[in-house]
Length: 488
Ligand code: PHE
Figure (cartoon, rainbow, N blue to C red):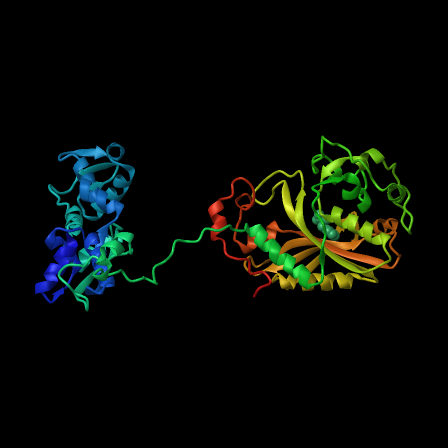
């Protein structure tokens, strides 16, 4: 056994200078010797010092040539001793890589004449490359030039060999004393515990890794965003209804019934139950009127508003449906300013690709107060996004049926070195707010963005299917770091 050999050797000799030599002289695997030395060192039977040596090992390609011969020799041998062979014929006799490398090396060595026809220029060649490779396999040392030429052809690579030199340690003994790890009932009965030597606690030993639950990156980013909203004094809206009526998703937002988003190509409609059970009738009348003939200074859309269209159930296409319900409820109370937010799922009938799924999480914020202006919206957006680490913002005029003015939000992405669209925003129209019963000078500024977009950027995910859905690699969740949004 390696342990006896090591301790025995040190009984008569000062030092084992090289664990590698020791292993080969005594017929052990070097690995085994190293393991025993580590353990003996731990118990201070020996003192071990690291030693390192650079050595060379064959690459896969090198191993192939050491066995089959170098490509240049394989090629030379495939050329007939007398006469010649056509290049095409020769190519058929050899593997493509052997042919290609063989041609260039055998040509360089002036062994063959390369033309359409290939013929030998010399009688006999030696396979120096193969010989050198075999010598390396045996662990022999080669000259600098030989090493460099094999290295240049990527037939060998450097490897660091690690071993130990060892001497007696403070606890040295020619054989290891067995130490007890447990104090047993038998030890006590027999009384042999008095003589036993017990193993010391190893306070440096690593415990087994703790298994615990892990949050999905979307949840980590969501939590940070929630904290930011809460710091800014926003209240969370109840978003626990994926199914919504067209009325709350579209009509109450002054989105006309012919609007393309209300088509089944864009929106998932429910088959069962296909319609909503109840709507606030008084309010429905006012919404119908504002669509058909306007009011509050608006001409409306001037079409026949249909109740059946408003009754249709759907999977909500935006959380703005929830904002609308909240504002409707707020308008019923004596006026108080409010800041609301939500982060939850929405659904759209999209074709799925690397950046789109048929569902995503929408982050939505709104502020409702008297006399708010577009300047307030820009200010709030700057404050909100700078807390997400996006302080360079630009705004572009846009269109939403329910906001006027509307702005797309762009942020300068330092990594991509360009402006990327990060959200949509606007001031809710009077045609939406006044039928709810708000006083005329109440304004609502609001914005929405997806949770997936910043999460993909923060976690370096470029395919949304790696982030969400059945193809997600669960081990990824264990390895993903915490979200540092709003922390640094
Ligand atoms: N509902 C919009 C969307 O789906 C986002 C938005 C919210 C826009 C509030 C303006 C105001 O993109």
